[in-house]
Figure 1 (tube, rainbow, N blue to C red):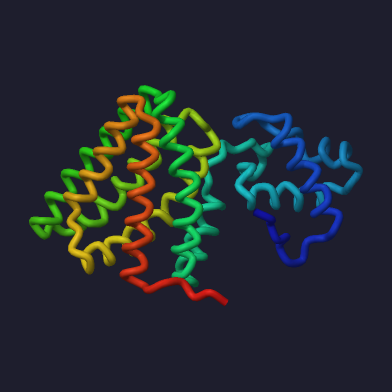
Figure 2 (cartoon, rainbow, N blue to C red; figure 1 turned 30 degrees about the vertical axis):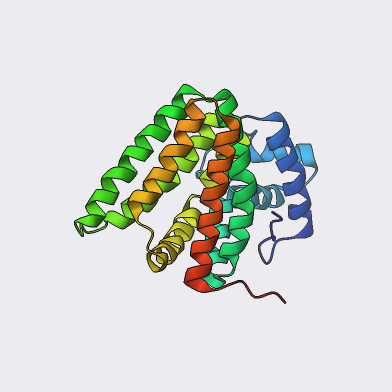
Length: 248
């Protein structure tokens, strides 16, 4: 995703920021400290003021942690910038829910297929725990407990994150972490459609239980088919809640 430079930044700072980001992403690891601003300024042939602006740009992108009086530290990627972008899209244009479904279709199927072939113990345990939280929250919804539906959606998100973790692919895990808030919005919209179609949370739990059973059994074909049905149902539910997307 391209980053728009903050207004008022000089072209030299923008250029240096791009060069510095290549160095950070290509040659540094989370937790490492950058050289001092004066050393960086000398290395890149710019003033300390320009270097400071460049470092602040990378901090704004989530690449660096900057504290007053200390050298910048490379951050552990957490998907927060990506998350903010997706959430903003969904809140300004509900039709983007359909775009998210299309992205999910590719990522979820890839994730569950890889998980079935090489599921990690940590991922399976996380998926089991999330599924238990879904069951508990579904029971609370039936009792009209306050906040139970939100807890259900959160556990649902954690289930999909766990499947990505089980896949062993760090990029998939990062993407699902970044999509977490957008997924909660999507699941909330899906729930409206489920209610219109008479689908219960118990049925949703059963669908997720079947997916995990296939993953644990190493049944990649069954897991793929089960996840595909889940995504198809999610799209059907969102259409029921909002109607079909408008094609321009």
